[in-house]
Length: 325
Image (cartoon, rainbow, N blue to C red; front, side, top):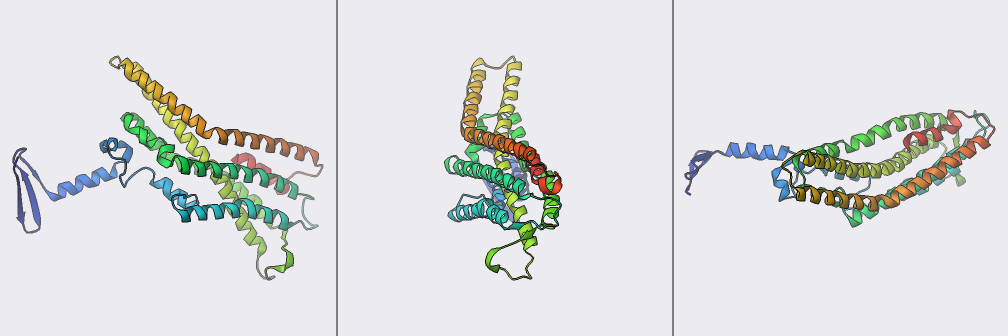
């Protein structure tokens, strides 16, 4: 094989005499751009290289950073823990203790419903944050989503899983956005009626404490609900991958030329990964199930126990929690 390079001005031409093929630099650039535009899971080189720049986890990494859940660095862990403690523990306690109901309010005691909602929301966020922290420390995002095992799957499974990865945060937004609109409407009515009282006159009188507390409470609700739903989305992604593999296994059964050994190995692999998924999310599922069940029974007893009129002002938090959880 003889390679001959000919330079003319700004043009470089490589001539491969054995293959009788002439390569221009523009063709190389176009082919590189074409490979870069193809998703990682669909690239043939994925079977040998898993460290490409254009990977399907870039949206996850960006979203985790914006949600203050990036645990890849020490600074990221510190910021994540600080925001978690502030929005999940400190802010709900301060907001519950600082709200005062004026005598002209349309309900006598909406604070009891508010406190009843704050506790389970914080507990669910605590469980979800602990689950994410353990996942990122033990497995990492790639191993958690079984991306390293996709090199053994068919193009049908990789293509379907690539679509599910792209739609993951769309599902999260579709669940969170309607509940957020109801929460905003309720908090506008709520904070336009109540008064915020802080001891020792920490802030001057001209500072709008109601508006500040309104924004902080909304941020706390979005963070706590978003962390909980994020773990649910990750669990759904792993389940969707196994569903795609079952569909691929069904195609192997339909194919007359399929080897029995290949079908058996694929069945064993699916069974093993289902066991891994069940073991990883067992604590999260059981803890959230117990928390939600106890909080729903507590809400039922509290609502039936009060003889006061129920309206959107004093029981809107229960409606929002039922929508999101």
